[in-house]
Length: 483
Picture 1 (cartoon, rainbow, N blue to C red):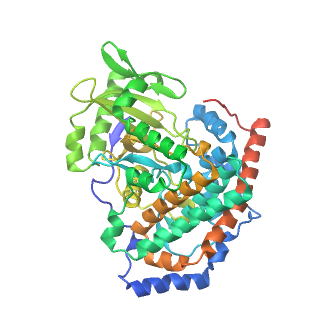
Picture 2: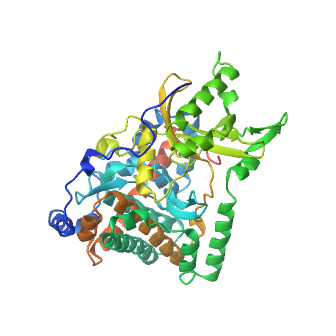
Picture 3: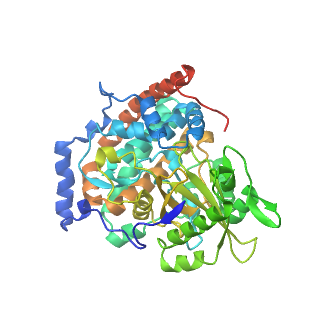
């Protein structure tokens, strides 16, 4: 592993496509209304697979060619569990499908994988808990509708997984679509700085939700908030390490957690690898703001391990890095996650950034109201001699998520509104919020179109999930469940 870096710290340059004339609010609203004539809002309800639609399993196999081969059976095993887990891992499949659907022509920085499990709580630098999108592996400028469709289809699919009736599922999806539209229209009437500073603190969110959910659900939410506040580097130290000669070391749990020394190729000395890692940390440090560089300098590298994460990310190279501060009870646990080409790039154009880690960081900083203080990027040469891009953040910093698997229909409808509002807030920061709001309008035409799309695409997702099941049964691919 050798260290190098691309780019510099600070705010990235805006893409050329964002450098537009400063139109008046009236001109921007007219732009949105004109788009309705070209692309009616009802057209977003249409979905039918193309005659030349790619084999979904082949797309997954294509992604697997750049990933750790030994971990691919875990990825497929996790996707096998249900149509919902399949959907979580199928961002490339849906991006290929969305490329053939209606688009208003108005673009924003989009998440690219905005399903309902990619929203959650985390800490702000001021040690408050906020709620926002929390996964940006696929982020890129693109059609804002794609994020809305991916989110709302996930609501329909999750509702099926929970056994909701068709009527209940439609109500959930309509609640999400309406919340997106309402939040965007609210943002359209706000000043630029108001939109940029807009955020949701979890405590305020829970106060507002108390009248909308049952007492039991509210108490569970409060308990989850308290649990999330305990998820930090100290908790990670307790959970993932053990004492070895008076020093904490990351505990092996193969294949999910494998210490660095257990992955060394022949001829590689541990001391040289440790030196390379320290060089990588110094290189990554240059992508942070000055004050955060100073803070990171107070920590010393202690240990590192590869860790399997998520569903769709399984097989990419993800590491947990243990650093220690004043003593062994002053940890900082970072996650360095491989950033590959976004699944959106073949459909909306290449990223302007030469480093995909920087692409993720730049997109995250644009879309989130506030981001991890240790969010940065890195470029290195892997053990296999191939270049790899990474983005880095804290492994755990008050991170929490809703328990989708236990939600009833009414609770999921409320959660749909929260997630959709967060998505609209993110799009309003980078896209033309006035044009988008004008396109959406004050009625529910768009909402009903999205509900129709979500139902039709959920059917497609079930067929795709079955294709994976069949591929495993036929021995085309190997899958390992239970890990």
